[in-house]
Image 1 (cartoon, rainbow, N blue to C red):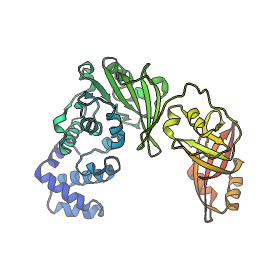
Image 2 (cartoon, rainbow, N blue to C red):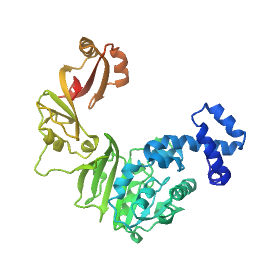
Image 3 (spheres, one colour):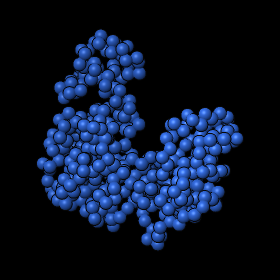
Length: 388
């Protein structure tokens, strides 16, 4: 979809096409196109069906708002889930003037506007900027938002209360995990941060800790157990700096306990715990181990073990039934002996191809189990467990 096609969607005729597309989006694609072509030209039909499809996909991130919003495929992929964007926006002071220098389709500027901020947003792509503007208008937030087509470098961060940046993490080759390949690249982002009063940077959760600027707070955020992003808070928003893990939707948060050193490690006990991914990314596994009274099964692996069942929202718990040095033959025999026909396979520090293993196990039976593949003292092991 190009900019002209998108603008057609904003006309009364385009809105009619969008309404019709929503009614047929679940039909066979040929049938859907045929029905829309009875009353709309090919270009408008294509644009409307594309938007209807993207809106359906976006419902998981944006809820009911998705029915009114506009997207590109890449923009939807990078857009922040509403609950996560709202969590970030709550840290901003109401009435803050925020510069959103990589606004994308506008997921974050919507959350900032809802939180009472005034947002001046830019995006280098004219289509994406137009979509962000349309999304603010569609959701009744246009009076708190301005959007223009421009490079991030054209914005003077010192003129705003807060700099918000979500650098693009896709290149011509696909998604990138290297901050130096972000757009704008990491040094340019940090240069803008240096000229800001306060800054909030949305980055990939796998960002190396060494890329976090001194004095900043790095927060890793998970939603229903899945790590969504890292947020780097700088300047007036950094608080005391350091590391933080946050779980949504509960809002539970964890920071380092200065009284704790490195977590102890020892033999596998009756129970194993898998910490929430945000705690793992924030290097807070020792804090989770303290919560359950446990120890690591290996000093370099984020699985915790203990001899007493403990419950915490910061970890999933499993009762261990068998610990095996890993071999396909032995694991298959052990699972068959237990009548396991449905196995959830988890792994950490293991080179095993899970999809291939699942096929090779050829399980049958009416029991379920969790198989944890990991390394203990440089040797591969399999733990047969059940959740508790």
